[in-house]
Image 1: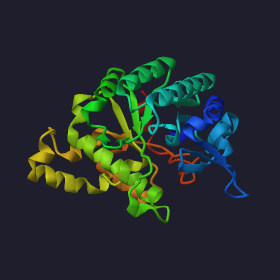
Image 2 (image 1 turned 90 degrees about the vertical axis):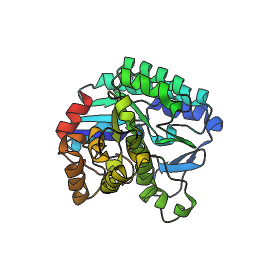
Image 3 (image 1 turned 180 degrees about the vertical axis):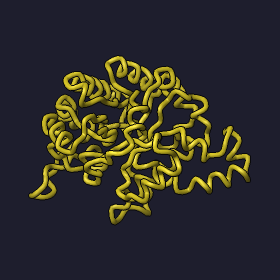
Length: 311
């Protein structure tokens, strides 16, 4: 069984964070006596640094115990470092990507990995993507854009051109929504995370970017957010408004089948609906392990999607 959506922090990355603790404002905070320390970077999105995040032997043992035979490991979104100058995010990207690539070589039958890139500098991002895939990475995990910039913006062309040339996996993972209306009751995570994916995925679809870069294997986290549920509304807009249809060669309900989606939905009816809308072959098992809201163990179905995505 595959698990496409998992996260890990190699020892070299922890060392880098400690060496650059002041630069990136990294803190290890003991919030509760019965929990591990929380890692907080730049006062955003702190999370419990569970042993499975940083102990490779424990990580692999937990995967084995859950019946997972192959895991795709991604950097954590808290360490994309898009808030910092690109020389900082580039440096950590190199450390993170090299560490993950070296780890996969020790157990290639059990793990493969995606890297991270300095999305704030698409030329550097393209080069680091190239370097990472030369090391054996399958592609990269990125956020849903930058403040004031959607992924469909011309700004990101160098990155997507290289991803297209390399037939790379681009796993789009949301960051916490900063909408002030959501700053209570864990809503930045509960609905803000899938909402960020919804905005990104809808823009990506309507931009026609997938026609421009057909070799990029785009994966949306958490079942594509709310987009699959509202695809009928997009189709109706396609019929009514040129602003919706201009960049497309078919209705949105056809384009939505050209992306991949993980199974991190926590609800069988939701997963069944996604399968009906996009097709079983476009869904990959995922868990979001070891974050608090992980679906553990991952759904053992949808192996066909994982096989086609990973090649």
